[in-house]
Length: 167
Image: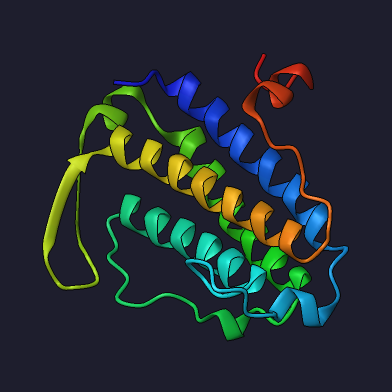
């Protein structure tokens, strides 16, 4: 199992990297933000919308709720709209982390997935999964930014450590 303090630092990194990526995405025009580029999610907007939606879904699951749908990318017409929604999700996730104990972290998470099937994992695995998922898709956003001729944000964990984020 991962120690709770390490998990909290991974989430600090997650939001640090997200904020750096938002800075890079704010340089895009509306057309660039929405332009289909043929990735896992068509555009920068669609990929960011996926990231915030998935983080919201996992937080809901951690709170013993099983959402049956996610927000649509069209709910986020601008970088600012994605960012506004994500700040609220971040507050909820950070509140959850602040109240979480080692015992709860080691406990079982049970939920119903979108196909209606019951699932169960240790909570710590689901929480690490989310950070890993976000890292994967941030890499895709950086690739999309480069395809659009924009500068991608450097997001390496060790850069966050150099910035003093990881203690």
